Length: 154
Image 1 (cartoon, rainbow, N blue to C red):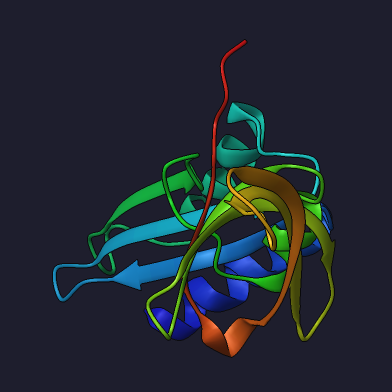
Image 2: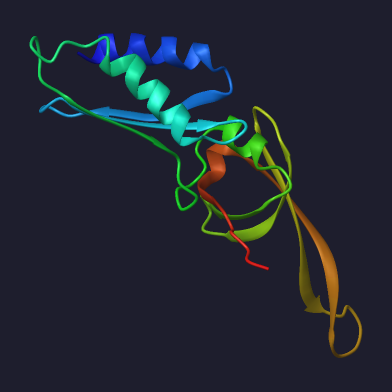
């Protein structure tokens, strides 16, 4: 079942090259859960097309299954470099392997990691009070434990 679903999924994603796989789980009871994302976002029609491409090529008489195709939600963390690239310019909250939490604007993303920029208030080098300073962090993907897009309401 796994190989057949994988092949059908690959074919469905080839038909719309802006879509890509985030996660696929097939349980012992043949419950198939597929999570996709897209460079331009994911529509309900995208999920339906992927679902149909798989469902119409599997035989329930041969092996019973349930199928769920969904888009990566805004509350889910970013996992793949492709997801980071499509979110350049947005604010991320990133937890690192050394337990830091950084909230900043995603300025760059490549196959190795990301670059975040933010402003912070720090004590003045001389005298009392604080000043606003520009900060930058370059983080390799292997150091990122969790990264989420911060949704802002204006």
